[in-house]
Image 1 (cartoon, rainbow, N blue to C red):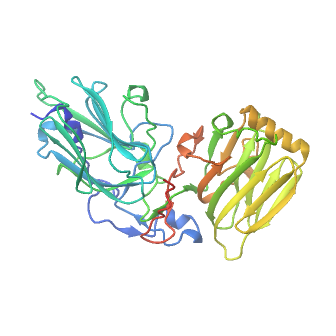
Image 2: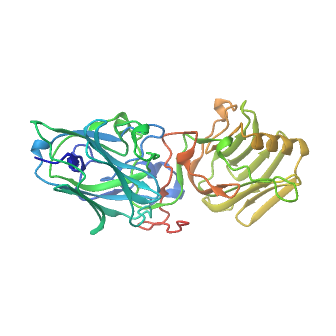
Image 3: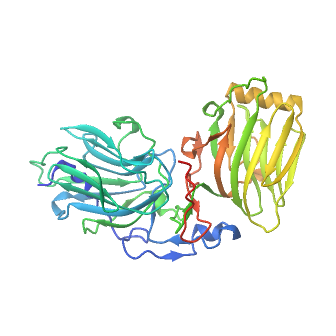
Length: 424
């Protein structure tokens, strides 16, 4: 009989085009072709499965059920790639709520959480895997042990963590990838399950079962896996991420007594009409907006003060941006071009009061809630190194985020290469 730890033995079906372990194909079709000229050459891997289809919903991207009596192999493997430091790779159980297993990442390192009638344990370690490179993952069950190999090397090993299944003529196993089938409070150690990552070339026990697919994979707008990636957050032009000011740094008042708001990011996009970010009060009154206006980058503070920086010639932006507001100056810098104006006292005080009271919101990639539908122009492109008061934002921590956003990856700027500037 197979031990209770058999939920480690995953089975996946050929089925749809993303569920094949065959040769990986690259195509110019899909999301890459819809992002404009600045993303040309960003091919899609037709054999990849994107695990990050939904935000705010811990349920798996895809699920399946397995009859353990048909299992003849005790090892499963797949390629895995991500820049996301935390999230669930897969979940499995043979007795919901009693006998379950999770393979995840925490701070970029593999973590296994195991819960059964004999033991409840969490173990993590090894090297970081959130480097944007493909890694070959092998999970195998031998006797009472569970072993994880990464790129052919032993990574984590657990012994005596299960017992044989008895008196179960047809033991069943459920598998979920990119999520889990238990509630968050049942985890042994709390974890944010959202994971912007991709899986390919899987070999699950030489079985041929079909996914019990969720709506996310059946949707024609399901996220794809790009052939090459770089760090950042990809916005498809139809959504935004919203942060509550209560979760953002206030930046304590410096010695000179003057509060300053600093926003930084790297933008990669084609000319367009869209909102990059907006700060609003609790009642959705707009205080600050940063936007693209086809040929210019604009920053609007309150109802009167507007800064305008012409976009560089050549059509495509791939440029750092800084917005800084103090009691004396309102500054916008794009690359090497900077413009500044005196800060109106009333507008600065309104922004400072809202930010320090922590009752408003910061929208990234889209407008504030008060804008009319015809003005709701969402950003299309890649934003990276988004820093608020010097601290980098993680879109997994947003109060709300549209499912269409890739939280930790953008199409690579150069075919077959990744941006290794990981900041670690």
